[in-house]
Each structure stands twice: as C-alpha cells, then as structure tokens.
Length: 314
Image (cartoon, rainbow, N blue to C red; front, top):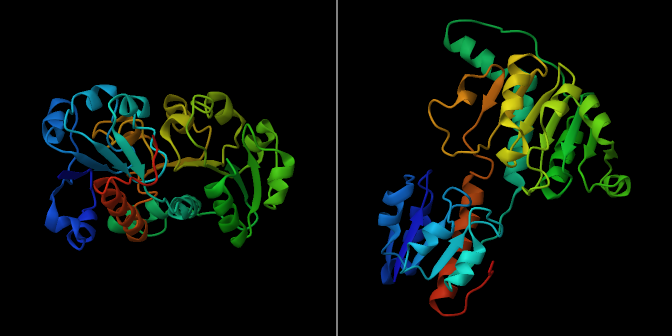
C-alpha cells in the first residue's frame, strides 16, 4: 500500500510514523512542502491513501477525480472544509478523521490578546534595533473581552479571560441570553457587543451565514482603542474592511492567524498593514496536538487497511 502524509510543515509526522508498525509493511512517504495544481496531481497520483493536515490542501472534485488510485483520505479533525465529501462518495473514497483537542487555539487567542495589550512586538523590535520602551500598554484586568461564538473554544477563551479579571461578553447569531448565562458570560446584542468590547476574539465555524460577518459596519461600531483577533477562519472577516479599519485608525489593532490563501503569499497586502500582528496559522500547531493528530491518523490507517474504517466523515 502506498501512503502519503502531506503538508507536514513542522516535520512532526516522521517520529510518529517511524515508530508505527505500518512503516515496516507499507510504502509511506512524508512531504513537508506544499504543492498546488499539476505538480500536486503528479505527486499524489501513485498513492492509495493520503493523510492530510486539515485545510492545508484543497481536495475538491477536480483533484479527487485526477487521482485514480486514491482509496481513502485521513484528515486531522472531524471537520475539514477543504474536502469535497460528495466527490469522495461519488468515487467511493473513504474519509476518516482524528480527534481534535482544540484548546491550543483558544490558548493562542489569549496569547495574541496579551501581546497586543502590552505592545510585545513593537517593544521586541525596538529592543532588537537598540531601543528601549515603545509606548505604554494596557491592563487586561477590567477590560471587556468580547467572545464571538461561545462554543467549545469560545467558552475556553472566556475562562482564560476571567482568570485575568476581564469582563466577558458574547454574541453570535444563534446565541441566547440563557445559553450565555449557563457559561457565566453576559450576552449582548450585536451592536452593543461590538461597541463595548475592548478585545474581540472570533470562535465560529465557517458557513455561508458567517462569511463576511465582520465588515466595515462592525468595525465602525468598535472603539478606536479596541482590537480584534481571528484564530477561526479567514472569510469571517472582510479582509478589505479590516485593512481599511487599521489604516484609517478605526480600531487600534488586530491579530490574525488564518488567511484566505495559505501559505500567505510574500507580497500579500496584509504583510504591510499597520498595527496588525500576523501568525502563520499556528492555532493547533503544538507538539501535544500533533501527537493526537498523528496517533489517531495512524489508527485510522490501520482500520482502513483492515477493511474496518473508523471515525468516518462520508
């Protein structure tokens, strides 16, 4: 059986794969780079099973139809918007997924909030250039943290914020006052939510309903001293509106971990926007999370090879 692990950007797969019995009995290749188009098709053509890191490579109907040997996909996490599940079903391709711990993303969101509050990056750059203090930061204690989406990750972030002594408010299209109260969080209507929060962090699943949810109107409601964090999905924020809000000083800052095109092109406009803290989609990229991903991916592989697939997405 020919098996590929692709988009292993942090070279995390090798130690897990080498220690597994599959390594001795099957042809396994690990790829740490990222390809698109004809080069990707050529690379993947020989493989029976492909293990993919969630949403790094788009497996649309065109790619799936170009891989006649493909029998199964194994993805990290049980949700992967980059896989055309209907095309997989049409080609009788099994799709299995791993457990996704998730807490690492909430931890990153809190880290980015702290970095913006204390001007960590400008102060760091100033130190590297021979300088010293670069402006005063602000307290998190007493500040209002707005959680946009109070699911598993949003609720985790709310708890982190409480530990700092922040006031926690939440809103989403389906959130109710009762559901927020169950998590000891104050529900606010949309306009009040954007107007009152000092920091807003997005924790929503991507769907057509939330695409472009945060745009020019929402930025106009925010305080000029407020900042926003997105570790969720790029299309939830209108990118052009974000750029304009930062350039025009409508908001104080933003921290972004997710992008419409990944890896982010070297000349992308976001790389030149003021008061924007960029991280390269590292929300789930921790040693502990990768260990879970690859442990479960190898278990999925075992099950598929035995003809008893587990954790099916199709």
